[in-house]
Length: 214
Image (cartoon, rainbow, N blue to C red; front, top):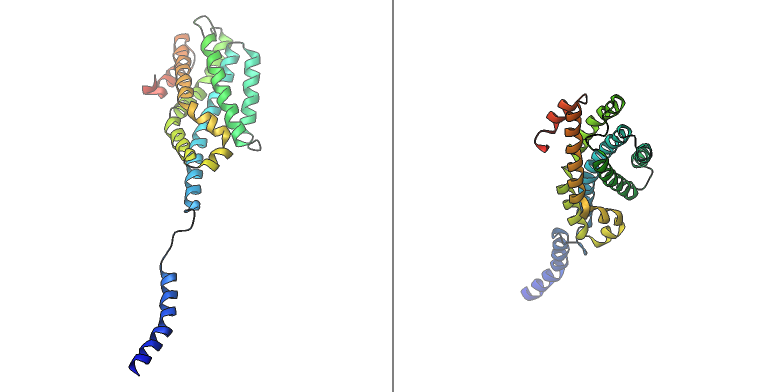
């Protein structure tokens, strides 16, 4: 009788125990926790794009005024069109990214070649030059913050092949950020020191704001 009672209790209680255990144990989902990975990617991307777009737009504003000072009207017009494109959030983010990257890079080379000791020394040129300085300082201060943010995003994308495929424009730009920063920094320093040597209004404030970057 005791044996029969024991068997009866086992048959009755075993399904209940298994059910409770199944609900109590948190098993990992198949394929991992994609929501946390996606959140990490979005956060990392947001940090990079915030610094990149803010700094590049400031830099392009500075470059447009510098082209005015150098009487390079076609380059000034082209740069201002790029500024409008990058600011317009209706355009695809990847296209805005590459447009800003290419514009700043190409403009830096042009300005470095054109900003000789003899250039931009007239009264009119100095007015345009002065307008560029606040933007140049803000752009440069933001630009030097890019490398760690770019590396973090690149590492995240390398670990997520599907995301990397969808963000092809980012994958093209991110590895080039160190060179981009180096070029922009070199030209930014040239712009500020050039303003000081020409006696451009605001040159001393720009020099002080740059601090250790000069």
